[in-house]
Length: 505
Ligand SMILES: Cc1cc2nc3c(=O)[nH]c(=O)nc-3n(C[C@H](O)[C@H](O)[C@H](O)COP(=O)(O)OP(=O)(O)OC[C@H]3O[C@@H](n4cnc5c(N)ncnc54)[C@H](O)[C@@H]3O)c2cc1C
Image (cartoon, rainbow, N blue to C red):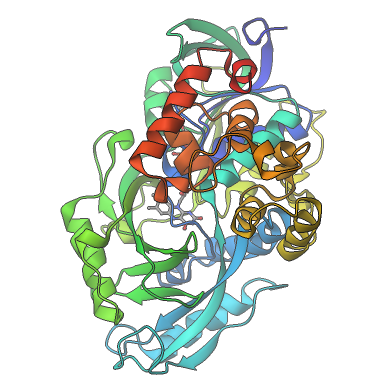
């Protein structure tokens, strides 16, 4: 039966981490689910985060104990469920006595260590920096604590894959133009942005997980609900790596904000973020000169290795859809989420406000729990103890060793990238390959035709950016000519709705 003839149980607007998380949870509990994303999966906020699975040490300063506790507990769950794309990361916090006293940091780290059970991550400790450390010599003392790192856009795609395997129908490049409630059923007018065609879909309930666009949807529906969100832009820069150890650094600034310097894709450092109130179209968010100056300046005030604007190889900016609380300052607005179910003169509508990558799974579980009164046969929550696609292996090193045995011709760097991007999903494109030539044409920096076909056929990749920034991060390495070659390949093979069939022909 086609999507237009079906009355879905749940229709989700938005293919960011929260939308796909909800689609996955709901489909796994036996509901008939559809999701529409107007661009690519994770094309908005969910690919522009700092990529941390963290409790948020600094939220303790705003007394957000509930949020921090919830997020800390999730670190261990997500590390277990997605060991390919999530890994522990040790942070070093240089001490600057005039910014925050040592007792305050110690108290914060004590809470951070103890608010939730740690199974794998080490406890925090005080440290002394050596002259061989990358920080300026006058910085001698600091603290160390652990959180985790995630490939945010791949987390979104893996949830989408899981949702699909649970029966959900996911449509990318498909914009919801209108949602009307007629006799207790949602009638949704959707635009296929590839063909330009519009069609109608129907659903018993509607989930508004449109992130920064959440209020555009409620305005469209003429829904009385409006929680009030505040858009806050955050930007990052990527530079060739400025230090050689595997730690992340957390830098305190005079304005009481903090900036992360994170090891990124082996050869780079990811530096961010900023907090700037934002009013324009979230899709158009980009880093400003002021933000570049801010990030360069704070980095240079801590590290021996000095950077300048010319070192920047990539930038990205995202817009946080934060709940409008009474905070004056953007950095102080709560990062927690609110889920509201309403049936205020229309079919059931679930609006999702705020949230973090770290808490997407609990958000999704709570969102679907809220639908239990409408769907009495709903199966119990299941995502806490279920690995995401490709995560069914013991350790990265064991999977890597297994791949080395089965595909001895695979270059080590490529094998490692496959392990940390796909986990065991890489068998989907490696099976049947016996030599490196079997991987097909090489598009540069280890991107072969087999992987490209897999991304198009199975992971909804349709454009160059989908491939080089959201499914992989190869955009950092590919030359202009190589990008053009990939673009031509995608354009020649991917026409309208016959992507999958034509891709590998
Ligand atoms: C700079 C920055 C740093 C961050 N760092 C972290 C971090 O380190 N750790 C952490 O846990 N969290 C972090 N966050 C927060 C986290 O990124 C967000 O909470 C999360 O990505 C929000 O996901 P979402 O699904 O709600 O929104 P989005 O990812 O924005 O998804 C909403 C989707 O809805 C789609 N959409 C909108 N309207 C329509 C329509 N009419 N039809 C179809 N589709 C539509 C959009 O295209 C979009 O893809 C950070 C956020 C920012 C901005």
